[in-house]
Image (tube, rainbow, N blue to C red; front, side):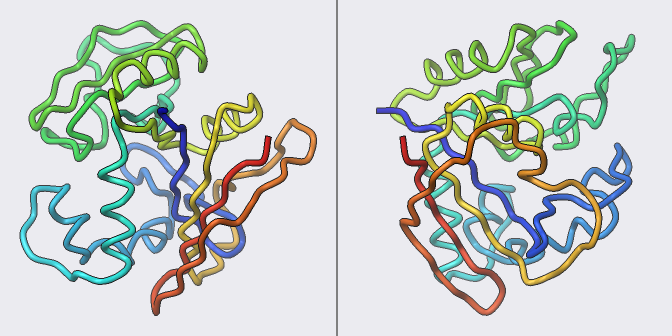
Length: 214
């Protein structure tokens, strides 16, 4: 059965991006520090179309997430750091000509747009009628894979609040950003119970995996 999961890098004080994010700086000020642990891993580099890299437990955990993912759901701001109408020549996102998703990506937006096919097998589908519709389409397209809610924080919160997430994996980065975008700020819900299913320590990161208790 298709599962819905979140997998995010997060600072010790709860931020997934730094302040003042935008098209020129999508991770915000200092936000790249949250992802430095992954840049030299062989599994991550392969997904980006790069050679080489380190093979270790961190790389295995990244490979697990890549291999289980059939489709992605993301918000409009994760796609292009904008919320407004598309222009005459709409921005094609932060991910370059060959995005690393290599499959269907469903982008939540208030503004219709035709699907955007990119090199490497990624197609962005723009969904204007809510998180449930986006998830239904993503489940259908995922086949035997799972659906990854890829961000940003507001989209993750919406799916968690709606009870639509099965598993949360946090890559806890040993840094205090002090400001930026927090992942679980202002959850509009009753307390949510989690069951810890895995903890893996490494020199650069702590991998925490939880299932959500019904």
